[in-house]
Length: 75
Image (cartoon, rainbow, N blue to C red):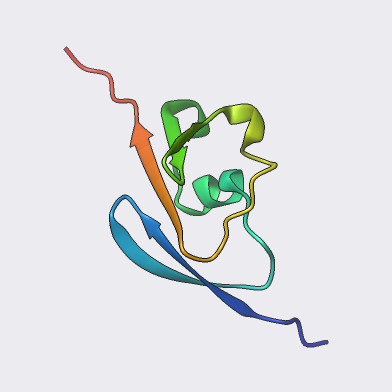
């Protein structure tokens, strides 16, 4: 069975990427794909801070701009 593949162009933290995928990505899918720890990341999607409650509801669209801010402890 052939699955339909498609490409999504996104800008993540200022860098352009093309994702080849067989399904639509949610913000949470992208967080897992990039191996970020969900409890230690903040997301800005299309210039708006995206609450965690929306991470499974927002699908990454072509030409999206996403910023991931990671929380780092230190002293």
